[in-house]
Length: 87
Image (cartoon, rainbow, N blue to C red; front, side):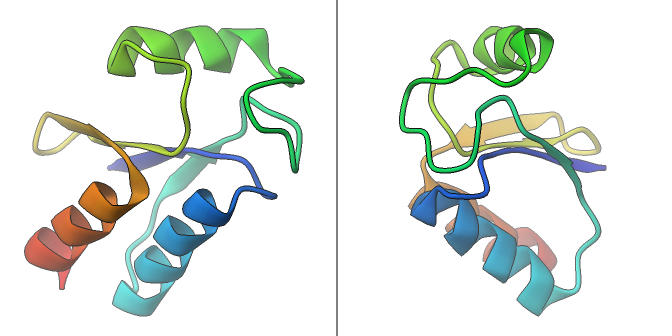
């Protein structure tokens, strides 16, 4: 299963969502921040804490591939990973 920690107003999150859609991959989203907020306005403290525990940082987007045991951050790295493993 793929889990994406993201924010709707974040252009980097949008790049990842577009790639997932283009590849036809199912995924679950978690929205720890309010739309359009960069590093502020926590929407869901529990999701934010889970994201930090997984990634070690308070940044989005973060992709977790539970089937492969991979956690990635940075939209370019995530897109490359998706195209390599799901393209």
